[in-house]
Length: 327
Image (cartoon, rainbow, N blue to C red):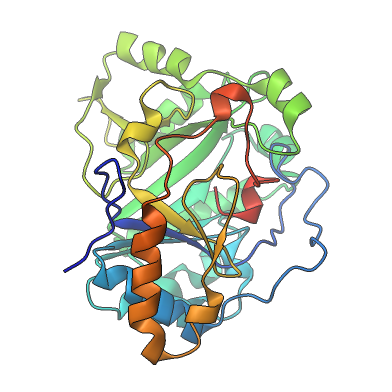
C-alpha cells in the first residue's frame, strides 16, 4: 500500500487538522488585538468533508490526529467531529489542543465521543501573569478543567507554554512544582517568528536550548522519541511524576525528525508550518468516489516537501500568525 513518505525518507503518521481560525483569547504572541477575520476567508470544512479527509490520510498510514485552531472548541459541532474521526479505521489517537476555557463543561462529552489526548495552553501558573499574556483572567477555571481531564483518565494530558523572555521565563519553579505530583506532560515551546510579530519576537524570544541546559543541570534526562510523537524533546526525572517536553524550532536538527502534516480549516494542505503555499484539497472532499484521487494528490505533494523551514533566515512563509494554521 502507498504511504506518506517524502523525498527524504521521512514518514508522516501524524496529521494536525485546524478546525477554525477564530480564537477567543488575545495572546500577546499570536493575536494581541484579538481575532479579526481575513477578507475572503473560505467556509470551514464540514463534518462530512473532515471525515473524507481523515479516511484518506488513515489509508496512507496516518494514525495520530490532532484537532487544532484557532480555538477548536468554538466549533459547536466539535463532539460530532471527534466522533467522526475517532471512528475512522487506523486512527489510534485523537488529540485536541485548546485554551481550556470549556474543559469544565465539556471534557467528559469530548472523551465519550472518542478524544484520547489533550493539550491545554497554559503560559503561566501565576494568575496575573497568565491574564497579562492571554488577555483573559481564566487560569483557575482552566486549571480546574485540567484536573477534571486527569480524573477522567485520558491517555495523555499536556500543558503547553510558549517561552517568553521577560514575561514567563521566571515561571520554571512553579511549573516544576506542578508536574512533581501530576502525571502530565509540560511542553515549553520556543517563540517562533511569524508574518506579523517581528518586533515582539525580537523583544521576547528566549532560546529553548537555554532551558534545556537548566533542566539537564537539575538531573532531567532525555528520553527516546516515539515514531508518532510531536516535535518535542522529552525529559524525565525520577523525582517527578510528570515529564517535560522542549520544542526548539531553531535547533539545528529540528526538521530532520518531521513526521506531521497540516491541513487548514478551509482544507488546504500545508507541507510545512512555515511553507510558502497551501495545496487546496477541498474540491477532492465532496464525494467518497474521489478517495483515490485525493490519496494520489497527497502522495504526489509530499514529493515537494522541503528538507526544512527557513526560520533561521527570517522566512516565515504564508503564516501570518499561528492561529491561522494551528501552530
